Image (cartoon, rainbow, N blue to C red; front, side, top):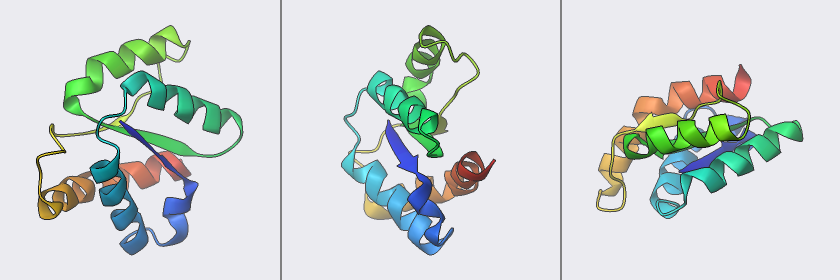
Length: 107
């Protein structure tokens, strides 16, 4: 899971898409709980943030959010896996959730 912060809003399509792809590619081994902690911490500081994870971690992420007192808090999920994917495949996954990520940052 990874956390995408407000800087993605600089250019909602070009820069945002590249950041989602790069972060998906470079942070695939993060534990879902750590990222939820990070996201909740950033949000408590007033920084809009969105955790992104593969569907494989959905149950764990939702359980962690509930354990942290935020059962309503959820990530944006993409198909598993990431590390064995080409850049084009990761770009397709990022494109499929970019609108949801931006909505999470601006909503």
